[in-house]
Image (tube, rainbow, N blue to C red; front, side, top):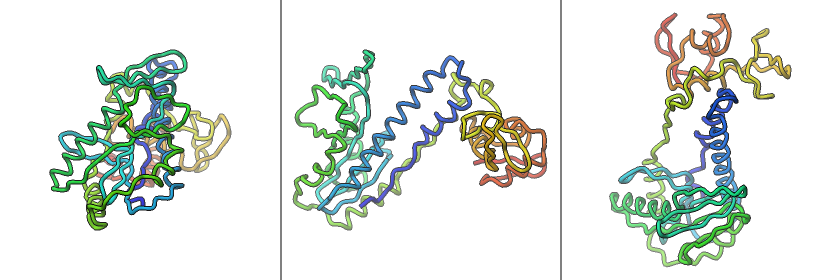
Length: 313
């Protein structure tokens, strides 16, 4: 039973904004593309895990929570947490191309990509060990002694993992249904009520991710960002206002609400309040009354009045 659903990636949304607004000739556009690709791959891996979990025939009582972010000595995040009557199983999902070589001295993972590039990364095994430790400390603070263990899940069988310790459970996503069906059911040491209590306690203690505005990063100053209304149909910036709607001069599509995405882009870029003057600047219109009406029609928090009005997400 799913107790907490998996939410969409805020980081992915921010990177999409960055790719829309950053000129392609910008020195860091290529890095933004790589970051976006990695984020999309990570989300796809989690969605694949969710698909096979939904297809699983789990024969024992359990509660599943996705994207669990808690704070012990420090903040830690777990991809998926399964609460059972004999303990907690933490699933760490990885979707990386190429070969993954797990080293123990020092503890590190080498990712050898198909193009020959070799990148040193923090080992998922170290990350999982840290999460187990932090989770057990988090539980101990609340006088709950649920033992925790971790399973590494690779999204696709084309991923090659080398030198993984034999003691570390590791599966591919498509093997999840059989893994859960054949998982040895151990002696119950927790009641169903205790399982639910733990799940509710985790949900109540969730630490929500509040990213910094994109333009706080010195690589992406706000002055470089492209102004104008974005067309979702053809990915062009520069829609114009005609007869109560936004018209794309590129593909001809009409969209009454295209300004909403553009205004939200600017909130994510700067984190600052929106004013009528700023709204006119980024929408590339001169009509003060129009912008007042557009901002007033959005789900924003307004304070002040007349020319002193400001709007926040």
